[in-house]
Image 1 (cartoon, rainbow, N blue to C red):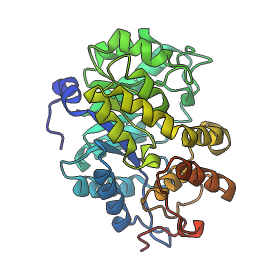
Image 2 (tube, rainbow, N blue to C red; image 1 turned 30 degrees about the vertical axis):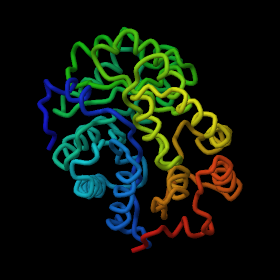
Image 3 (spheres, rainbow, N blue to C red; image 1 turned 60 degrees about the horizontal axis):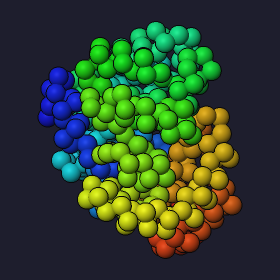
Image 4 (cartoon, rainbow, N blue to C red; image 1 turned 90 degrees about the vertical axis):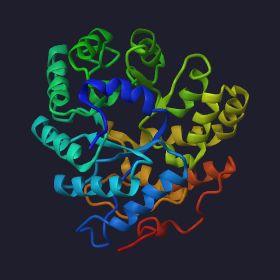
Length: 339
């Protein structure tokens, strides 16, 4: 259970959430009938070795809620107090999300990434407010509010996805909203600038996109980069966060340019990999596999990743000197810890 009270969520976040949070995608047995505990523990151990502050237990794969809660328990048991375990509040409807967040709290999660289901079609700011508040009211855990274009709000609600006047209401009425994952209006940086200017003294503002993090953090304080596929770069993003805290902007800038060829390749693949306004978790799992994470099969339905995309992602890491796995691609679909 979390070691803070609901009323202390913002103070806890300000003190504890300093660094980078990666993603742990569930791994499954070879017959896909159950979760693979050995592989999950492998990924959590490697995230600790890479220096991550915490890890998001990804739910946007074909996994049942009981399986997911078992997955979170394994993540928490392996993480101990070394990683903040983040629950992924991304389920099919509000009822399922309320059940999931209560179960996640019991399983040992310390933080919630609030998402909005594909079947949720708000037509007013009040609709978004009601959904968000219902989830926040259902848990004592600190919550990450997540303005993001993937929800499809911008054409009906506001171009920034969740406008600041609505964020203001939610911060006033939901004291456990402790973080804003500021991707509103992506790919514009105005969302994070606006949130920092208006709310940075109240809650932690997270910049999850490393290509924006490195320049922006030289101009305004950013203590958290959560949550994202940072494992693609191995231990580099935790290292960069440490350099930013020390104010070593020259070193950060050098690393920015070192990673730029891989960043351009990864960004160039985004449109084909992440079609349908849905993140390709198969691709994210492959990115982690390149840096030593388990990889392994996902259940249907899942998005695919093809040879051309795998070759490009690996080449990006080779070009920037990060020495990715050169194992045959077929090994990715088996995983490093098959059971």
